[in-house]
Length: 478
Image 1 (cartoon, rainbow, N blue to C red):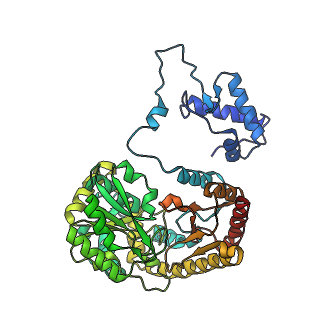
Image 2: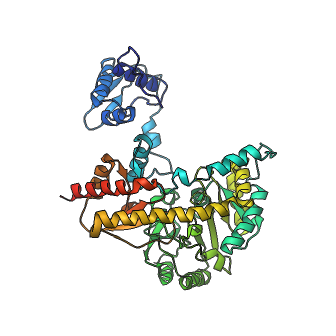
Image 3: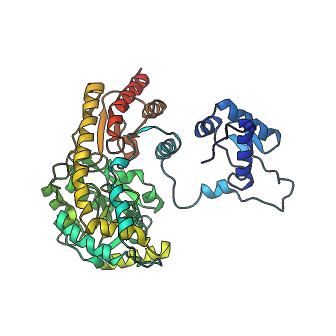
């Protein structure tokens, strides 16, 4: 990313003015668009706000920028007199379309993580870099000859990887399937997207857990679906409520995360899973099981998945390597009836002609040669240690201000705040102090909850992070 050259004889404000002028000239900020605020740009470029003020004043003096009360700093239309040269109204375009943007909270958190270095990250639901199997992947790339073709691959995914997954899933999760019933995706969210776009129609009613990670994904609303929430308790949703919801709204699909649920960490008991499958079979509705955390079971004994208990082929099963190996490898999988796999593969072919052969090759060797088995053992120990450190910090520093259930797997802690607090102000104050988290309302929950990731921060960051989180809470509660 561009930064001003502090050794240059050109004043920094002038460098910034020239830089912004080039971005405007190249169409990154077309006429009528709003520039980043002075405070925000100053933070990104790591300069004083007064320096950005001076840069913007320079551009205003040349007529490139104009100020609009309540609308910020706007790029002017220097071609207003020449009506034959019209710039598209990009603002109208970006605010249109069927694919909705992320929630403001989510966008704000991602922007902070992108631009503010050194944040203690309790927000991201991914592993810290020291938990990635980087040495193993590097060794695979260096020592294994790559003989695969570099053209478009099968849109269903590499056959060798699908065969390897058949054996891996049978061994570790007692899920029995065939390679022709597996679609390789770029991760769980792509699998969800394909299901929503290809198997449902606008106006269809679907059910999700409350709270649920699904609630934070605008792709459900973008697909025009009617979203109904089923309360998720200590042991997951009550299957009988699915029956009630079906009778009232004729729901066509159910989305659940029964093992170490995101964000609550709850596990649905086996008898409740069996009952849920019975109801789905009776009603003839599919269940989408998003299962990215089961293998993280800290005691080494993963709870059964819905798919492993499914006798009537009601479950569409989604898994990935993102939470157990690396989000950067971008490998996920979807198990479904072959007719469904064929439909989704056709959609994949239209979208991108299938996933790159290189990450599939890496994933195949990583799993087939037993590296994933060994890595999961290591990961369980490290995640349990981080969870314990986070709980120790919360107990010693925040005391009865906060309460939570102890998760036995997964990457996060679901916490109830036992006092009134404006979560937006708390997030603002916490971010200023170098710590970031996700408010519970992002997942559909009532106010008073937050999700804290113990997987993303380094171990020695956890206690300092809780100290700053508590200080920010005290500041916002007074």
